Image (cartoon, rainbow over all chains, first blue to last red; front, side, top):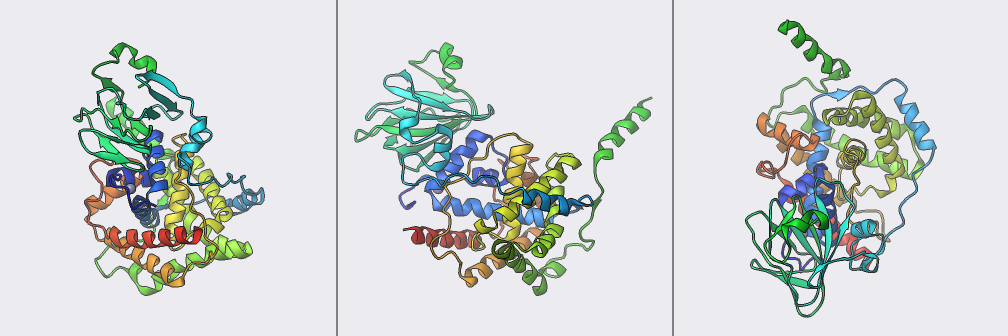
Length: 216
Length: 218
Ligand SMILES: [Zn+2]
């Protein structure tokens, strides 16, 4: 399942995901990648083992109040919260993304950003932005650079840029120094999940003026 | 004047804090730790059977023992993460209730009970303290042969015990850095995995468990 993935997440990201300290948009990126990549899932779960040790071995515990066990048994007696329906695998969008889109690719509400490129911003907290990008086969995303970190993961098709070639499951990690122009392969339209922790700076085709409006 | 104001401000935040009791008095000494004795390792593997007793028989006595051990740790973890004592108490109860309801989901070939409890407490913190959703990876669930190999269970528990010992043996400053990262106090950029912890063996073990799950699903 994950044998073909070449570009993985960093230890920094996996540890922060395990610790639960990332902005929601980055959590979404990590959860989506882990759904496709058992290599990174095992790394993330070993960072959770560190969290287990921290919980277990921390200096000092806090006394529970009297009657807390009985109160918890009463909570349990109320019954389990309704479990989410089991989500089917093997679709274009892995399960965590489907939760944000409300379905698979057909449910994405695309908005054109020009030159055939479309995007859909996903509802997360505002510290970072997650969006789906649609790049027609053979087309390029306008040349842009970043103020902060940008992670781009391929969900369908593939793209190439100055760095390498990226296919389903591969994550490109770009910092503010990378000035790149991803171009979709000719064989298929490319769909990506892109997460940024600061607004992108488009260097051409997209006047800076429109950036707040488009929320890129 | 200044002295008076200082006294007031210093006292104030401490007033809300519950008494934190030291859970062990002894100093950490390499290789001589009471907690790394064999007896204690067995106790830790025993939590696995506690969870099974809850899953299979809704065993309240097993739950009470788990509660006594973990609830005060969850509460302390949440307080260190910035919660006040009352909210931490409430959340610790909810985390323990979740443990009961999700006992059938626990996979001892991929996590110790402490690790599993940590993930539930972490998600509660994200939900309640940070007020954000927590996207989780696609659930692999259990294959048709749900009961894992006992050898795999023991191996994972032992490797995690080695990790625990390695963490205890770290210089205090490094250990504090890791703790702060997991309490949510610190950005991770500078921490990562430069502590030389034995995560590789655990990673391989979990990888094996994942491969088996994938295989069982097909
Ligand atoms: Zn990966």
